[in-house]
Length: 443
Image (cartoon, rainbow, N blue to C red; front, side, top):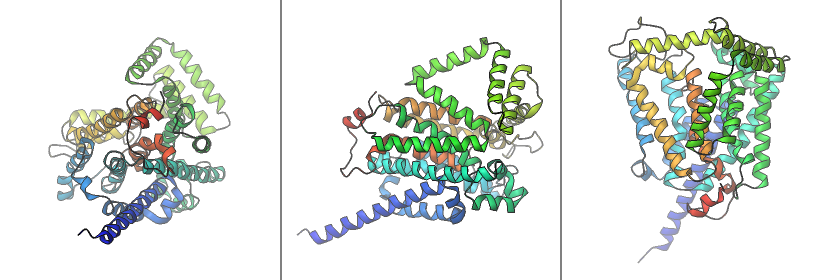
């Protein structure tokens, strides 16, 4: 006979484990989004939460429905095994912990998203990830904004505070001020949150739109106060693109039009436009200086100034890669004296350090993850947002460090794909993938 009591006990146990699993996931979202919380509990907390998350999953997902992007993440990290074994693992002045700790955290979200979105097909949990991530990032951004009112340079100084002034870094961290990672991950989240404000969807209620509005405003105010010119360019470019990009065709047309305008518009007009932006920020010395420097670099093609200096650093990494294309300067045939690494481009620096042998699996991981989401969201009005976000991430990684900025990876792989399901966060009915789901995201 069937033992109904045992079945009920097993069901109750499974429900409890799944709830613990979701709580662990949301705790990881909080860790990523609230700098104050992250500093207080440390990296060990995230590792413990991820361990709890793993053991409370249906472990069959590790052998079923695995996709190429997940497999290639493993391949990417496997390329570092020889360096780990030989004790020669390194990532420039940043040290080996960037690869041991930061790189894996960067990719944590890709597994979390796959589990809920493609294995469990539990869109209620995805909705909760989206909802609570917006709440957490709002809290983190408000804390950062308040801290920056007192210490305007804090976010910028945090990038080097641990090395140059640990006491100052500790002060800023205790105030909950977010640094480089929080600023830029919030920038990408702001762009994707615009979906909840400018697209029609039967899945999005007024409550979600209000939350998204609060998140967008709090992040925007924080970005202005943080004085990161690149973050403002990201949200400006992202806003323009999401207005016009609906599919691959419209994206290509937008890029062609932008490229054509870039070539035919006289340099002095672009220079004047950038100078007008710098005048607009005349009350903010840093932004005023950044946009003025960019304007002069563009007009005179000079290597002077901050923009010119960064271009030289990009060239250094690129030249080093060309000297050691297969395995980089750290590889078996590499030469540490063959060139220098600029340290300011995520993709070019990695190419210079480890070559195509390591970078090809990385780019294939990003490509197949992008393609997976593209297929899922095809014929929905979120399709264009996926295109824009992945494009912005690729461009950002070309001009800034990225792989050890784990907040960006978590936002890209875990939070961004969950945003359209925010309306299901507190839906008491089981949500299954069917035609009505995609019809809810009206074109």
